[in-house]
Length: 187
Image (cartoon, rainbow, N blue to C red; front, side):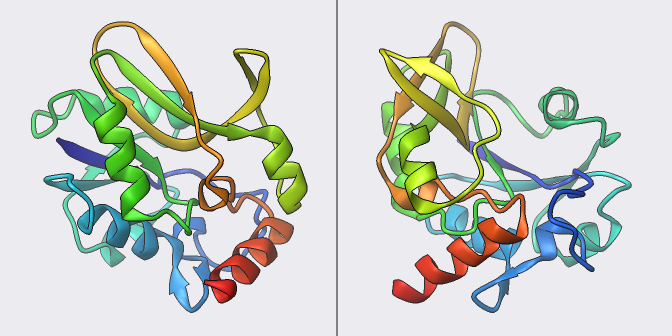
């Protein structure tokens, strides 16, 4: 299975002097941390999904790129899925998930049994860690937030909830980056 790293957004909430995927957490750009986790996982090929908002990221990444308009996650994902080099099912990961472990990717791939799979974390975990919660969904009575790790395929959609704190830290704001730094430093 291939993987797409979504890294073409504007990143305005982070308010950083660099493109969001290149923002460093524990001394490494977030996109490098994500592509490294994917390379250490069971995925076959990794593609960076970029846009005109991320021209430096386009030249920085050490994997093939897929150019999209930069109109938002869903729109850019649709464009990427239409690329002839990609055939679903495909793992998708946002570039602002810098603590992503390869084992979590492998768990998502193993849990995928057709259709699409969304990995979410309890919103309570995100709040306890002190990171932002931008969107939630109800998963069997648990308020959960999408982690930014998915497997996209044809068929029914399913959500799995993980208590892995590393999946709860999407770096969208400076406060999120501080939490990521602390967790990274703690190992």
